[in-house]
Amino acid sequence: MRNPKIKTFFTEKQVCTKNITEKSSSRSPQKPSLLIKRLKQNGYIKMLEIEEKFEPVSKKDFLIAHTEEYVHNVLQKKGNYDSNMLEWSQELVNSLHYTTASLYHAKKYAIQNPETVCFAPVSGMHHAQPGRGQGFCTFSGQVISAIKIYEEFGKSCAYFDLDGHFGNSIEDTRDFNPTLDLAIPVGCNINPDDQNDYYVAEFETGLAHIKEQILANKVHYVVFAHGADSHAEDDLIGQCDTEHWVLCAEIFANWVNEVSAEMGGKPLPVILALFGGYRKDNYNAVLDLHTKSLLTCSNIICGNNFEDNFVIPARPKK
Ligand SMILES: [Zn+2]
Image 1 (cartoon, rainbow, N blue to C red):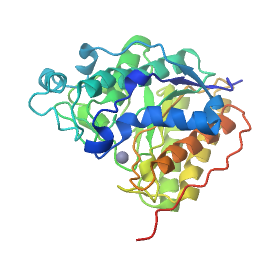
Image 2 (image 1 turned 45 degrees about the vertical axis):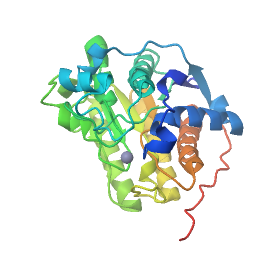
Image 3 (image 1 turned 90 degrees about the vertical axis):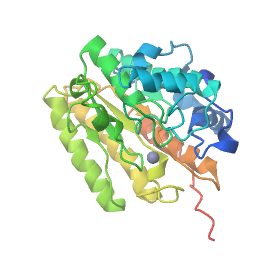
Image 4 (image 1 turned 120 degrees about the vertical axis):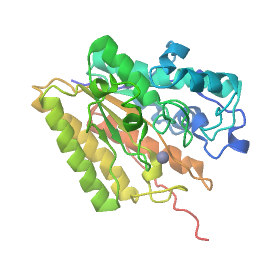
């Protein structure tokens, strides 16, 4: 039996607003707060149970996936501190300790309470490399949290990274920290590509592979990062129209139930995350895509019956 609420690790401390709307090309550092606000406005906040008290990660944790020099640069505004392509501020640095912590605590809670689906409203986790940031990502939160969990619990993870861009942090960190091969085994970072039906088919191939790994006891929990920049109307990229984008959430949620049944009714630990999404003309479209994905998981995995009346606005014709 699943907990009907999605346990959400959110604090305003994981948000940075300073210099983001005006000076940065990505609004992702603000997104956790904007999404929670929108869910409060439209009433869907009742899907979630919010946990705002959790410990930040430390500087030592950043060294799990990064060189001492790069971590120092980011914290002190030196050298290649701006390789993340975001405007530096102390507020941004402070928030980084909480975004990775949100994902870490969501994973930890899901492992200890597998009947509860957990949600880390975070982005900026999957392009950084050991010695630099990249593509609005400062630190490899997905790698750091996975290795911490492996070291504490001996549990391994698979990523379904449905952001529009390939999540390179995992493959780019394997040599730097070999424990990553245990925390996220090779072949368990699933990043579908192509368009619509072909994208969905690639995703389904990935799901079938990870199901085998789970049933062979090689993978113990999964992260579903349904980035909104895989939506066709996104500013940056976009592989799926609305129908196919939402279909991916439905397929994932049904797969979770199927795998859990095959595990003898033991619920598979599931963590949801945000990742990318860029719409200069209408940022609410990004927030509503994330809401649609959450609603789908809430209804299918957690057994709820929320209505979904969202229409994702099309980009205005030029
Ligand atoms: Zn992206």
